[in-house]
Length: 269
Image (cartoon, rainbow, N blue to C red; front, side):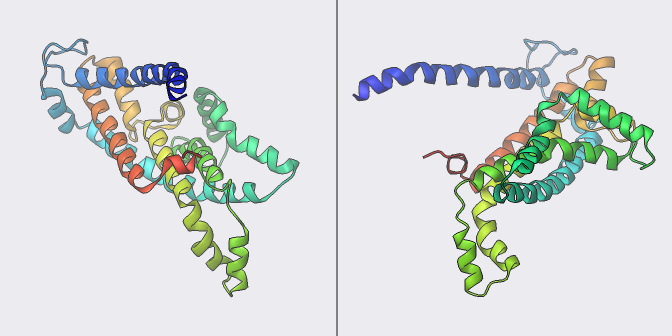
């Protein structure tokens, strides 16, 4: 019986291994290209060297862009986590056609192509009098729109098996609505909030399409700086910048995995 199960699972394991390889090969190419000893962005690399890593660390363009992306992603994560958590709790506790419509609207930024969303925001900001055109606030709004659905999805998943009788019991024991939420609801949905915040940070840090329409020349996140560098200077400094972006994602994922049980969050055993 066990042998039959292993035989059936073998194609799925091979498919998972193939999918993992497809995901990891581009990462390996970026890392090796950033460690290239040659003068141009080529693969396979012409030897290995840290010269382009050092060029990135001393670059007057890439280092500010990296720090700006970190600041932008941090602000977008904070705002989208607050909005997404409140929206997810509301959607999980409300039934009806309006709830289904709201859930569809919240997911819409994930369905729309990034170019369409970025162009729409750019036209709206440029033709309105709200003062968000080509500003940090406008760029932040765009990133929050893109990342909030991720938080909603993870928090909603965390609340699937939530038992509201726990809150009722806390209220019966004298807790206020706020105390019941902070001491009962929040600890239960905290893994979903942490996972959503992680996904929001990663997506915001690497967001390109929306950023391309909303960024300004003096406020360039890392993806735009890399894009601009590849247009005018075909050198491995852009790949070295990609190495640091990949490192940040890996560190964020490791730290989050120590705080969040993803298998339990998404129904694993």
